[in-house]
Length: 399
Ligand code: AMP
Ligand code: MG
Image (tube, rainbow, N blue to C red):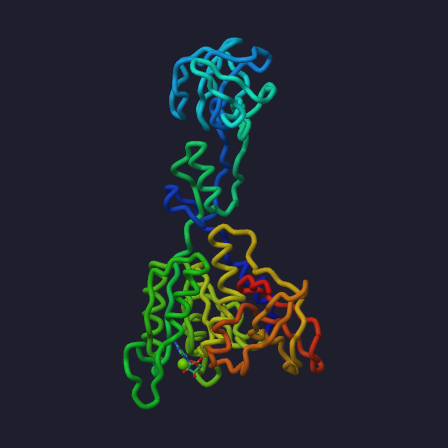
């Protein structure tokens, strides 16, 4: 049995970012950039007006100016040549007409037939966005390793990159093991239960940025399992199984994985999720998660999600962790660190946590609605108000 931080490190030793692929901007959201991106050109490419108004020569102090022909719309090439005594109509985003060096807002002007008079003095450069003022040609705008969100996608489009190199989503296989399992739409017979782990883990993989390429349910026969694991790994970069790793199952999955590859550890000193087995088969990481639904999801959160993120090229692998105060007493486990499901709220500049009731590892209701896992190390009972560490699964609502 090993400690959680050793297990985490051991897993990271066996996972690496996947080789980059080229994808279009419409497919790259959420993925991690695998190249440095440089702007080849200035942005904006031309000096542009930032308001609707009049392009003028700022140094000109004529009391009124003759209006030059032209609508000055964005997307038009300005025809007017602005000289002292004249003004050209210009709209937001339109190029500054030649000769002009400032724009007077329409709100600061009065049109008088062929002429326009300004109600304010003009400063050079006013209401003008110079060429290259947002991005100068040659600037590195995005570094390799940047996760792509809407702003980054927009920036790539701005600099003319429609295809970019990114780390792909890890391709994941999810297998449930257990002779007792039936599908969600089936009515369980005597001794049977519905397979919830497969669906919960598929959802967790997607939420963590992975792509599920194979999923299924396997019996508790070693030959079946071996066959399914082989088949799953033909397509997938990562295998996740649930069940068949507790003592009563004679560790069926661990045995099969040790026949096909290398088992790195079989037990982690934590609760829930003690019987977590980690192996590599042909270099591919395989996570044999415990069968109890809460154990499976908590193990996924603590170990599989960070591994998937690393494969996807992320360097920030873990959730944020904050100190919280307990709303009620908590009794730690005598020997293992416990990851207690909780609801964390912020109140008057302080984080508060209440647990989600019975923490039985079969009770999925302890996870529904939880937004944090409290990290409770072994030790004496913790009173109300005690400070503990909380892994935030979702950002708490402000109260
Ligand atoms: P095991 O690790 O196979 O001994 O399973 C531990 C507990 O989790 C048993 O009560 C199983 O019935 C239950 N379990 C295993 N697999 C699943 C699953 N896919 N969905 C729901 N419960 C499961
Ligand atoms: Mg089982």
